Length: 346
Ligand code: DOR
Ligand code: ZN
Image (cartoon, rainbow, N blue to C red):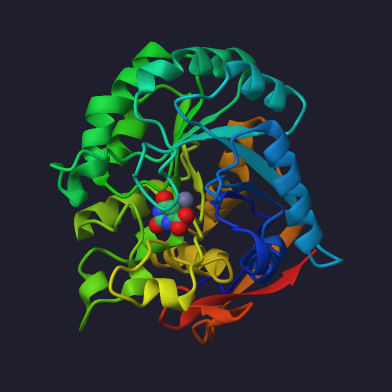
């Protein structure tokens, strides 16, 4: 039985770092583990222009510990009014690494998201031409669609047409939660990939109600059935190039989570790689953790893998303590002990 594992240093291909006091509190956790991270643009107001992305990147860099070795990769928040020329110029000058599509009102700070995908056709064709990845929050927002069906309906009603109409566009279906998504991505052409979070590998929808409602396990897309969780575990642990690490770590204050209408988001930045290691260990797939965490993502984005290494060992560790952020606290995932810990990073 393997008790120690050394892999290339991982990257996080989907994270929320926020701004201000929250940014200062959470970015050290991401920067300690991950060499690079794709940073979500759903701030208030959203990061819609290259100038805004550069300014946000400067704020992230200013919040990093002095000894951090971490590169934030920035994303453009697409709206109905996105100018293809600004997206293209921002990608070519390094201000953006990808563009993020939130269907309007799908999740936190998505009010400015896209209402009509057809308006973005010129943006998608520019992105396909220059090789800029499109990152999808893959849920429909029609009020009549059950929350547990929103990802599957998005695949059928939106994604399939988008893939067919843009055969050269690199597309990441983010934080997938269903067997349907696993099957779809697997069968799709090589330009379609998916990220998988640590929490969707660990919890199913029943866990959100274990002994009472557990707001810190609520995120969007919401966790689905056990059969879905098992399909996600098989996909992540397969080592297949289409599936890679994206934590979707999404911090909210304890007050915003523990209230009558709690915010969506699981905060896992401090424990993500340990949680993935535990899952891969349980699945007998530790030899594939490096592909999922450190190789498949860079390959999809056309970047070299990291040269640094990180070593994990099997050891029981207490669950994370709440993290202080300005005048509030953020409760981290998981709420149970971890089975792996990081022992070395070089
Ligand atoms: O649970 C979520 N939280 N899902 C998202 O898509 C957004 C995120 C956030 O920003 O809090
Ligand atoms: Zn997210």
